[in-house]
Image (cartoon, rainbow, N blue to C red; front, side, top):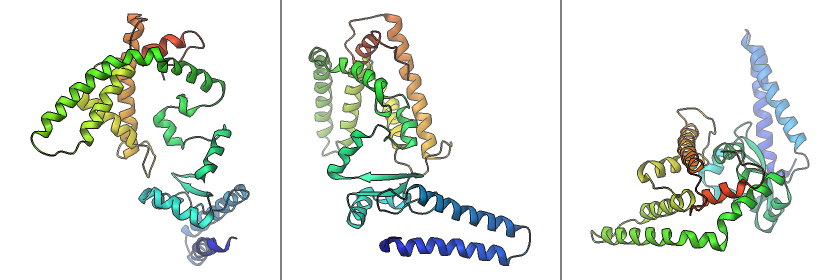
Length: 283
């Protein structure tokens, strides 16, 4: 045992020991259930420690929950405190998963590990076949296809739409400022979202609904309980994702039906480029 973690690990063992003593001292049918539950926790903890015996220093936290509450309270302080205690590489348990944090220059090691990826609930939101979620030849192909949307010629196509939308939003902000100082964050979000939708999808925006739906989906990546249940934040994020995918599928179907090869948006360029190799899925 590491001396710095001895108090916490001792407390965990004492808790399990107390639970076993209570189970043995209480008569009735619940005795065996309590004993079995405590024994299962002990065995699970021991197997977990054995599996990660060669992992970097650190603490995995409480059973199942790990150190998720501390991480969610202040992620920056969480990392800084453990860097001081364990060094730039340490293990922990967050979002119901055991993981290793690499900070500073050590983070470059991630690029050399094809099996390193996002937490499971990140993949549920981003999509298991998105460019950021896959590795190997398929990742290389999709990245090559997406690269068609960022050539000099493609960027030149987007410029008129970007200039027009920028001018419209600047005029809107000027009108808003006449009433006095205002918080520009929501206005900048609206501008950024409209630029993204026009340039990426080549479609007009339903600003009030789609932007709020997109925000609700992204908020699902920073949750304490990543379970797809209707009353949880992650469940609402997954419903928002389903709504967005339905809207995006409608746009894809319209572009396929039109057959316009001269479209001036990223989606059309990517769809045209994807026809040269292995077909890309809707996802």
